Length: 446
Image (tube, rainbow, N blue to C red; front, side, top):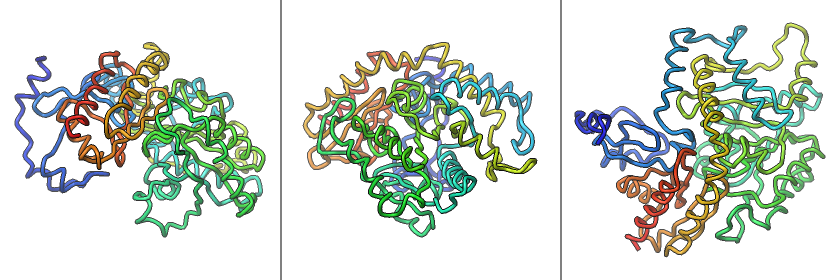
């Protein structure tokens, strides 16, 4: 036992009576409070319970922390930045690190997507991209383009715009009267099961966009939003040719194509961004989460230079070109965290490491296909989804993640899908532990 875990084990327990005043997000709060499963610390691959038990992080936090926890380089950068310049608004002022982050990201992004607008979260990035699409079409004299196209089973954050774009039913049901016009293409989860990589069929589903062009009129459609890999819904990998077809249709009809890469950006799909992994370049890319290794809230929208140039050219001199922004846009401390994170990704070759680990990771994950009660496995890069059948397994996805915690493994579940997104610093033995623990917990209940 390390000194760190000894300190955790010796700490006074946190009383459940002190938990009366917080409402946890996306959590059955009443059930949680009956038996709280908490974290008290994190180092490297592991979270630690209040008693000092190590719990391997099989979901990189919440897809946020591919470089592992407790990185001293990021902590030092954050501390130094607070003492140097703790805050400045980006309204009419700025600071050098925000431009440096933009320059560094431009080197990682697909060619041409080299203008960055900073925000504080993936949800803010999505709503920013929506407003950019509206402002762009208005600037080019097509203000009637106000309709957005998204996809069933998609997740685009929880701000009002993103909630309407999203296609996960429970995230939408209470918020229908928002006034944001969105239509949804079909999702890409076809009848194929246990497909390693991209499904061979389903590219024709992209023609739903063509149907909307014919139904609503191309003059009314602003943008099409998709996750290259639909993550939070359970890891839906795009069929071969699907993203290419969307790109072709968007180009033909003047519709902006937006890739939501909040989950699959920063090496999760193999390349720095999934757009590069799949060889399809959108007009806008949203990002967040891993941009600071999850240490400080930050997000961004990458914008094609032609869109940026047109909006600059159409605005009068000394006029604000885009009436939008947040108090925390380009926050100095977030920028310092981002630069330290990008340095780690580069110096430790973590994107390359993820590429090299992917084949073994997916092989092990797909090995769960022989477990009774596992109804499907899907995956790409360092991201996999494992579906369980509660009628066979005897528990649902929510109960599964609780039991996995008790067995020393943290993962995210959505519905009855276990989502695996391990940090890029894992070894093969750690991937073995993740898969073997899932196998043991699921098998113990069948």
